[in-house]
Image (cartoon, rainbow over all chains, first blue to last red; front, side, top):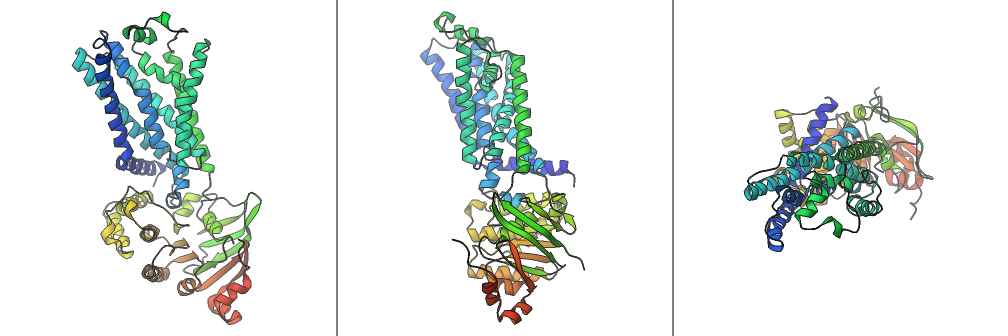
Length: 265
Length: 241
């Protein structure tokens, strides 16, 4: 039996685990609630929906949050859980390499996150079609960036899962790293006029800014640029793609390297 | 004579603690060998090294002549193992878990389905095959662990306290299963239960502080020390608290 055949088996059964877990359906439900909240609150609190479809598309774009939450909740226990809950005593005594197991788990988690992202973008597309009668072509770019962002968030989660003793620790560390530390540093760098293209939070912003940048977004909401205490610089998509690619590859390779060396003692 | 399990000069340190100290022993084909020793003697560590779960600090472990550290996948393809008290993914069923593990070992189709049915029947989980494992007791999980050990009919079984968590009936049933399959398999079996070991094994290896202090047939040990229990008590020190 080749390692590729084993990889297919691992990916298939790891994906089955995600399908069986309640968390997938909870996140799908929360996505629906969040998108509905935007669809209801924007016209209620403002003066109807924005005239520009791009502004509404950016408002509805929950890709970064969705991808981050999906990645963290699906992958936080991917490696750490095998050691913490002792399921590794069964899995690791089988003739399959740790690398194959980690890659299979990664692919299964990615498939589950893609499912979430697709669900989110289906809601966005249906909403835009119903309100404006069209879907901007930039939605495709946003979707593509979101998939790349999901991969990078997943790699970061796998890295923390490979070094953490427990699944909860890995989940919390990743959540704090992506959703607290990265945005704080991003804000500080933005306020001081320094580049922040290498931060995941800045990379995630491109998923919404691809519709027309911060300026269009602010104008659409009736906020003029002068009201901001500092100048908002729209992140460069090319640099963001490069940064996300680095997170994806480095995080993934590190998680494989660490997992291969980790002992189940 | 073939020796499916060979341990040569095996040592393992956990930081500065020496868990296994230059341990050497050989288990002949179709021999059932019990591994006895007090808590912390190095039994589980030895079995974990044999199963590729941890690396030795020095020395070598072979399964069917294959160096476990160098070619773990090849070595693991020849064993079925229960190490410590294993857990299973709670949201899968025994049939799904066994199908997953069977397919990882190259089994498939009707052959795999038939074998899953056989081992589930063997461990008396017939009515639980399609029930999520989250509803299982410790004893039922231990039965499932035994089922996955036998699924691919391996020539070598490595068992670490396999009857842990089983009720008295479960212990008897487990012993019958092991006695049944043990005639054509090599079994290396760590336990604290001397009676259990005496019923399943013909030979015992006694280790203490990571060192092999005796490796002989149960009959020979009983002759020399009057009983297996006395042999154990005389050859081992009280475990550290």
